[in-house]
Length: 74
Image (cartoon, rainbow, N blue to C red; front, top):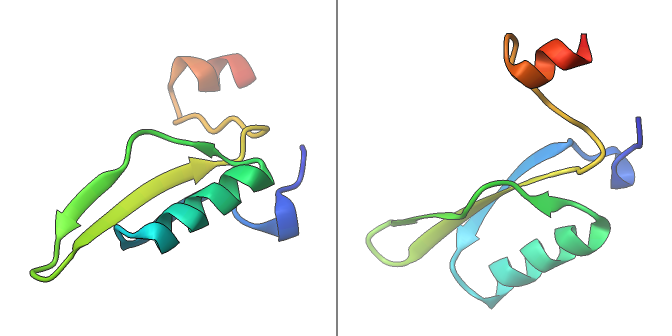
């Protein structure tokens, strides 16, 4: 298995205000080699939009028990 940078988790959920700083954080993890996992989510906390984006390390396949991908891995 290929290790992630600095032994970070293979799955990460980044959250924060929808601003340039959040976009820079996402750009930084993409530059490390992570890939987007699904689309972003957004909510409003009464004052600002808060966003979330999941990223995964591409060299690790994670499959739910009983899924076709998990069955092939066995």
